[in-house]
Image (cartoon, rainbow, N blue to C red):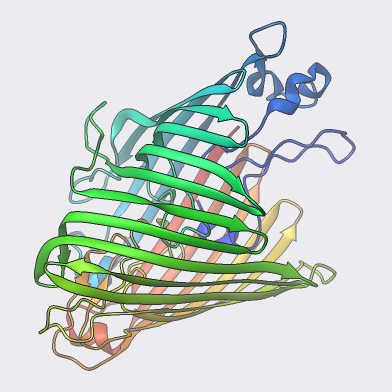
Length: 451
């Protein structure tokens, strides 16, 4: 969705009840399993909206057994000129993604079972569609959960979204989201809510019912949420890692802290991560600091919101030794810097101002600009999954280029959102010194029906 551009400012996809109604529907989420529809056990509240009879289906007289259902139907088209600055196999590409995400959430007392199939296809992806373009029919999420008083245990296939998805995200923007197989435990500890996890990422494959957890990659850790503060440790292993011209086993540990709040119209989100471990027999030392500071003006016309984001992400300072300094973003959100994100958060310095506007109660818009530099001239640039896009190439040039992006979103109904974006990425000296350097242009159009 355009959520990566607009969602940080507004909240599209929210079920809006009539302001005169006594009942307000929960916010519709990406992961869907986090929505709580138990309040609709009151039959009168179910009558407030046509979706009520789908969101709470009583299956027992005592209210202990009930079912919640829903679906997402998304169609998205993206058209590119000069993709990858003209160096892509099909640089002028235009395609359409389709996906359907129905779900059923069964509650039986303190137990629940959640299942969400996925059906995806694509049209005109060139030179051919990959696994995140279409995975046929498969299981996106399927888990059982037990509420053991203060502790909740969830096991099975599930999507994960931690913090602002800098390291663990849903990959919601592309056609096939990311899920993990494994165990997740939530427990309170004083003022903190602790999320413990031990999972493996699911690898999407073309064909039906054949998505499997990775044999090479695993993730474990603890994520603590306190008022205005997140603290976390994440462990990661990849037995088939590639960095530059080296390959081998990678074990990486991430220690992170995130401070976020709103006050008197100001909002901020500042996060720092340090990583250490081993790769191909050598040590790892990497880090990132990301910041987002903004000011909203709700009393002004169109309720403007000005936001400045800045990111510092370490790169490898010396490719001739066995020490790795390139930060690993692990499993970040799919549209990391906006709808057009040809590079990801690796070896990067980024400044990203944006302006959000509410044109009407149902229409929001944003305008953003961004500039990108390499942090280390000894290292190249990478895409969002961490694949090398351009090697260092012997040039000392740091400036990668500039992005300008505009987006608009119309919440036509509580369930239907229509959105569009226009983006241009102009190449800087580093891109010109290392290959094709034509400006990337992208048009994105999307229709998303969700209840």
